Image (tube, rainbow, N blue to C red):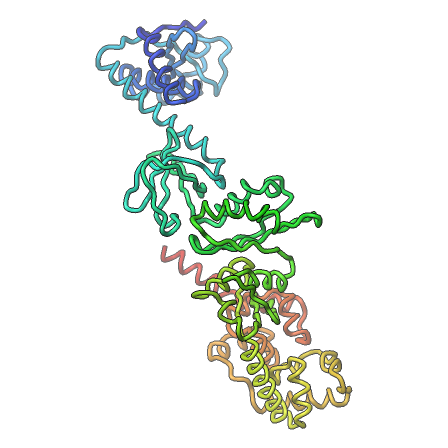
Length: 511
């Protein structure tokens, strides 16, 4: 049976340590672990640092016990850490290979030096436990709004006090023109919490888009209850913000719910953000509708009216056509309105006036009509029909499915066949200008021919990397009549990707 040996002075030190722990707000288990570490440190100084010493603490009586643990092994290489099975069974008959044998150690006196060491180690462990508690308290609070007191301002960075924790509001996360004074209350959004050597670092922000979203969540019960959802937020902190809201309950007006009776809810957020103007708009899954809503927000006591929307899904780009007298209104001061609208919908938005759009459309129509009439040697009306249907190159006439040409009013099979033949003859006599790197690379890939290369070029696949980025389905969509099997397409794409692996190997070798 293992005996317990008490260490002199343990009860008093335990009482002091628990008092410190209560003051710091650290859990009792953390106090016990700190005590164990302190006792083990002192014991190793007496019995040797090579020993595997373990301390046990009786949390009721304050008594301490010390043990030396050794692993049971077949061959003993280090007597301080290992013990043979035969020797272990002499001490404990039930000992088994691979287990540990615990041997009690004599008590130690807490002399002046030992007591000082104990206090230093104990306080260090308590500080570590305090930092760990702070981290545990805040790690799950990322994304919340917290209230604190301004403790001081250093070089534009605001030090915020949350009782026993200090956090930093960096100057680049402060709303412009805000001035903070020591002792005043502040609200901020927790962006990140990191565990670092000097303690947990809590990063705050008042410019983050989610800060505005969380403010609305506190002011609008419908958002808090998930009846209304904030889909997206775009901010120019301190100046203007756009917030897109949506509700699956059609009986609820999400925009009206956020504005509140007589604008009380949005005004509360407006005041917290130091007068930041907020546009609340209706979110839509249809990108065209969403873009119109984002641009048509109320600005300068007027509403932007979008006359036409053109969507380019491949480039994720939206072109909005507005009346001439509203162009500057839609763009906003220094492009603010269109920039925030682009951030909100996640697509690039270009704003043009009706007159500019009309002029550009007419110019493009005339340019393509003349180009088709000259290249295909047809009447101007044929070129106009092709241009009006969106054709912009001879390559498209030569390689698009026949059904696309037959869909044009007045185009019959005989005419379509003749147009395709003339287009192919023109391309053979006037091959497209291809960049040198494409000539050197893509045509050299297996299974490539001039027709496929030309079609790829006309569809924007103009480099080896462009080709390597393709999937099999994308290749078939671009060149539906390539005549290649799935295996041949896959082999060609993999051949285009070979230089990626070579580059990676070079980087690894250099590293």
